[in-house]
Image (cartoon, rainbow, N blue to C red; front, top):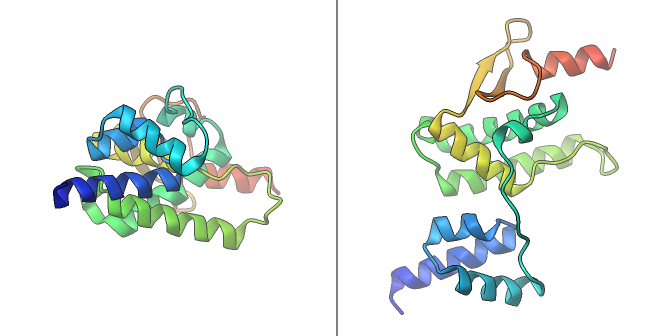
Length: 168
């Protein structure tokens, strides 16, 4: 086995342990789907989940989800710099996602009804930032940057201001 093949295999192990779907792991590592399914079963003790990945517009479908996605993508931008708008950067994605999880754990109670963005949705958002399918917009009222999708399901406007208004 070459050092490159070992690196790709170790990367696949790391990504599967983090919960990334096999379609993404295969895309990132180039490993054969059969190899990945066998590896998944060995690591997780069950068959891998199937079905389509979420779209950015479904990830951003509610104000709360849009706010959570905005926090993640701002963390990702912080770790990856301006290059994230040109291509998905895996180390920055993983580092940004860890930072996002730390922030969520610090500021949301464990019993919170708010759904935490999973790593697969984070990957979709990072991919779509690079293609321009999602973009940042600055709120004219609070000046916070929030994430928007070109194909919108959520109402237009700042999710932070909308959530603040709702909680008053």
